[in-house]
Length: 56
Image 1 (cartoon, helix red, strand yellow):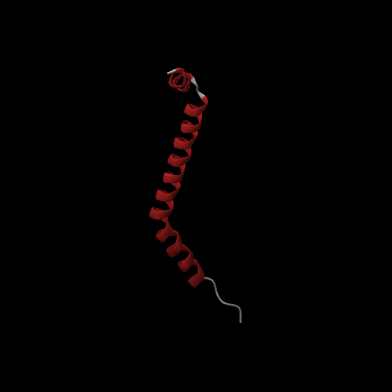
Image 2: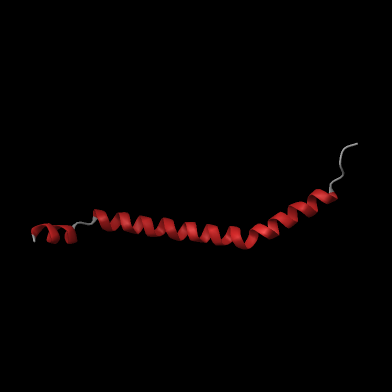
């Protein structure tokens, strides 16, 4: 029973969980941004490449 009480009072585990949640949130935002903008960025670079003249 003392083990459970100490586990509840200990804050190291809570801090690790908070960092994991923050990291997963940041990863989710990055994945969403890349998914939504990936096609647009690819199209932009394709259009720029077409406008640049190839060396002779």
